[in-house]
Length: 472
Image (cartoon, rainbow, N blue to C red; front, top):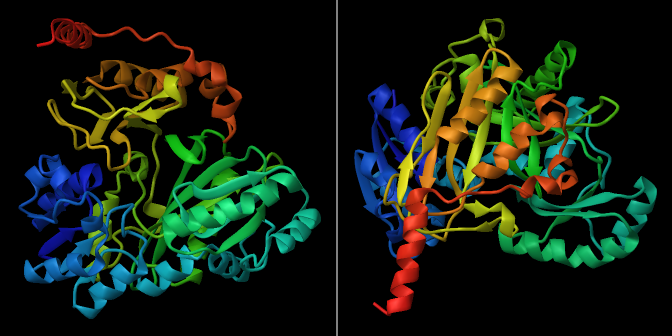
């Protein structure tokens, strides 16, 4: 088995991996920038090493991270999600230095990271794909001709995209011409590649993804699906497992497609195959994420499978401990991404010091986070503060438990998305389990909530006002 793992990430996912290591008797090594000196993952790891004052470059320096893994005696590296997690260069560098990369091979990451290659691979495997360009677009004029063939709306997408970035919807030829260079610019800045392609826009689909696990012995299984339709500008907000919008036949069909996809590309470790479900009940392959997902928690909750532990076991060369017929789901789980954002102010980030924090608890409630009372949220990273996960036997009870857990959560000093999520939970369309990716945009009234200051936050405001008035 693996004895020591360097975690090439920060924050909540680093803490999650550290906990898995502790349970497996594996030593954990954390890395951090100066801005993360007081982060929880630094405190919890067995060892922690400073990457310097720049808040980002340390986490993105492949060779420095791999050299550190070698120097500290690590025999494996876990990339988490974000940063270098889907960078084939990191996996390749680990292989060259004799470090086990906890994920698929560099070749598979490269192939699935290139959206046009991924589309071609899935088409060859027999999966339904969204109609789109054959390969990358060479000019705006080519894009215009293709759009005329497909019909508007269409989507321009970065070939190496991910996380909702480098995507623009175009409803007219004017929008297509206007957005073409913008998407190229976004793709270049975000992913270092100017390549873009086109897909027909599936209007207001359901976003359904399937968790897969595959080992090095030819075994591959799925852990059922997650519904990620509650999103804003392609950024997921609330995730649900299993989807309350699928029947059993659809569930088995899409699970089978995901396993077929993973076998077709020789996939190993944990991955996610993402689909769009249109209004007529047709599924289309969208992309494959070659890493652990932010929302892996809800799959763990309904299947009782520790996905991070399985990642480590597979990387160590062990067989999967489960066959498909042994995976049994139970109940519904919902995950809320608690972000440091102000929904009333265009969801702008609200970084600062957390004056008081306490996690929700009780039956069926889990909180994954790296924050604590007094923690200063740095402005350099993603705005997600915590993930609140709830479980119940049926959908209605899961929604009710989600409301109770969010109200139980105490997070003071900065604005968050919690009151906005409470509005969503009260909406009859959500409670009926009937929603799509257009839900947030279709209901701007959800932002019109009243938010009372807690006594502690009110005291801080009054204190600041007193200081400003007295000049102290």
